[in-house]
Image (cartoon, rainbow, N blue to C red):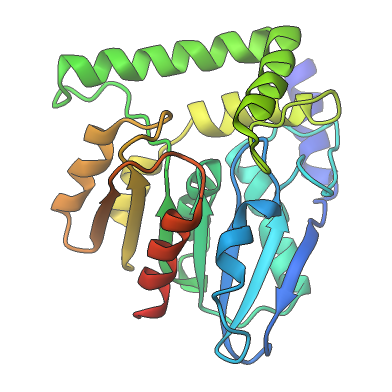
Length: 269
């Protein structure tokens, strides 16, 4: 009886509105929506927002469901549908001009791709930054890529099952690398992190969603990105509507070099 009860609860539970960290620019201008990654906040975009001129764009930053100052309800699954519902409801409340451009970093790229799949008329272009695309059961993959994919997925399962280890090590990494945003797993966002990791990052269909997209898709990633499977991303460049740009000696964090390239791609269109 648990599954039927949970099903009906899911139907009637309210969709939370997200915290709007930044909303600058004329509402009649072209809108750019920025979605950060897992265990991060809207601070991810610090090196980007100052370059997106409010006289040309309306720029919106959201704290994703379960992170930053957004709600962290215990009743949700934190799958990609939960994330999209909250993004969609928040953008509707903000009366965002459509179609808009969407920029997603890391898990935010997974959410951006599925947002387009769900609401295809609302988005005119996608920019996916450091997308953790994991393709399972693809016979065309090399043995190396299959093995690496399995290692990542096994590691995520380990992290989701070991709270104390994950929280303590995330804080240690932040301290060692002096990271301002990202890799911040704590008691407050633990459930959001654990469920988002397994239900959004691991259980994804992003590769196929990008292939099926009918709009331009720009993918940008660093060659030192520790969360990616390069072969899975590079294969997407075979499709006419997808462009893939690799940044040499750049990692997962959106530093100044990464941000500069993102700005160049956004503003040239």
